[in-house]
Length: 523
Image (cartoon, rainbow, N blue to C red; front, side):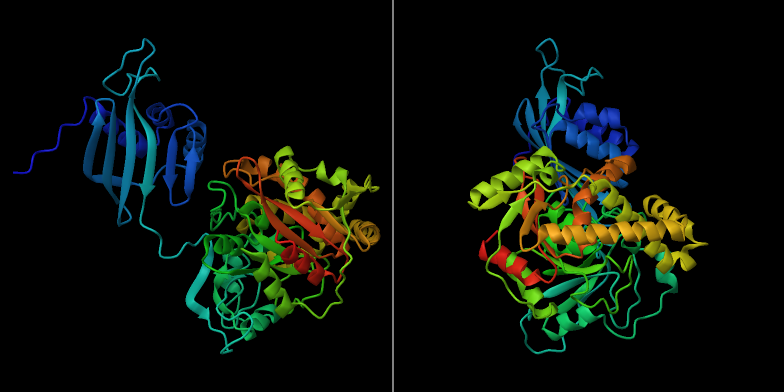
């Protein structure tokens, strides 16, 4: 005969039931009490691992409750009288089964003794979860990342080519023949016609042997750096779980970081390649303005929009460049410079990661002081002229439909609608002068600066927090936009093991030099 399993330790199942009740009620106080305090408590799921009670609590407070479910089976393995493993099979209200595994420990109370139950509301002692892992049925299509996918969505017409075997996540601003452009907004998508032909960049990649995996999400009209689309949600960031993905090339970046595609085709107006690259530990390039034709691309601000792409390695980043970029003269003489005033715009952990990277690669970098007192005015001019152009392109359609936009993007378009022709002319004049000055300062150098001012903010940062990060980052990213310059973002890691990025910026037409530099130095 098979022996019956030993009974669960006293009070454990009552604590487990209390946890499940609190979870379904979204009782944050009770859930906090039932998870062990301190920095070593763990909670993991398909999106990543949270370490420490504070991180777990912050996650729960921002998610709006757990999906409805019921417990189907509960299994207990007793380790000793104060420790036990609980595995529960769950059934979701929406269908499918999941699994929850928890390690429970009976902690001493304030008097050094233990409480056999849930701690009687004291917040100390009793049974606590010290580690948990939640598994739920995977969605057939993660609509935070993809608008539509295929196997492939569009095959390559070429039997072979330099990009054979590669798969592309196409940002939902590029024309893909037979599909509408959605621009990250459901109302726009509902009235959009199917595109008769591929965008230039899409066609070139297909001819080189790559296949389109799918059309990836973007922030609405590409007018954001966060990736927090109000309609479709925030694409996951696998390198920094429970932090934002970065936008507006958010879906393409997440698809590449997750391994769902090997190339993320996107755009960069004010940093929309460089920021998600930094946040998700990817390589990315914003090309020289106009170097890759924007034919078939829905614009945001044509004076600043540039084609770009992301990959997981430098070699693949350069391989795409060999297909999309025009012939460009190459230069072996590439002095690297760093401007302390720009480095000081980054958070200390990002600046330290760049300094450590310089040391590790023994880079010969010259420090220079640049006259950047006008940087704030340059950024204001860039944002004003960008906004005016965005309204010129989309204002007629948006005039009666601003309520179809998420709050953050709506606010930017409302500001854009208020800009007068005289304000736009003044901003254009300042922006053009700033661009000329930036190109003069860069000259034949390669400037090294942070790709973004910080690591990816946590998903619960809130609108004000995200806006502060956006403003800080755009003081760095606007330099390439104003100068029409190419920029390559190279992944780094902070001491806390969070992804960050260092940006290499060069004069116009030096895209291939930057790609060679990244590959040759094995960054």
